[in-house]
Length: 265
Image (cartoon, rainbow, N blue to C red):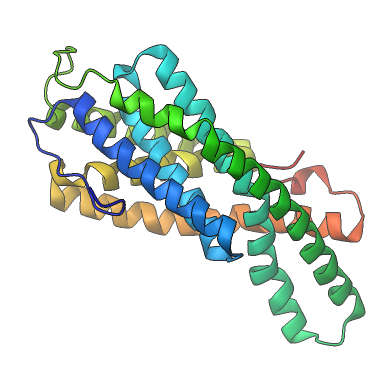
């Protein structure tokens, strides 16, 4: 199977077999991203790795209840570590493109802005060096172990989950309920709750994309469009908070607690 092809899922597919197919495709895509990042320095490659990890984490969430506890926990930890490896570089990339560069275009002679840009580039370079070290290690281990997990899954045994169609719809409904609950909490609990809402929305979105062949097309298409719009809106709020944190780091001034982003130390 091509690394970028979509597995052919059917309503009667065993869920374990569906996870193996989706997991293998996701791992291949992540491997391609790591190769690109080790060979060149492009912001879009960092973003692609993060998106690939999120997609696979959503797949893991969908099928997690069917997996042996040891495998599910290992995948959860390893995929989180992978996403975290590229997180700081991605933050600096967004900060440069959406905050620093527009400011320099408006005030090209501002010495403080140029100092901020220099500091941001230095921090980003150091973060990238750390990221590449972690990715090279990840490629050697645990990535091969994740492939072995898929190779040894019992794909055709009756695990009590039935066929993929009903199972997938049940899991998507659960993800939607979680999103609604977090959306209500975000109305009262501030930025961190908003960040959790955003994560729940991404999980639902990527689960729908992975399971699209066996979900009701018209309903899921409308829901997917809504999730994309909401993700853009919430992403802007979170990115602004992260930008304040990074600007404070560049200027060497303390960050107000209410401005602390979800990833702030």
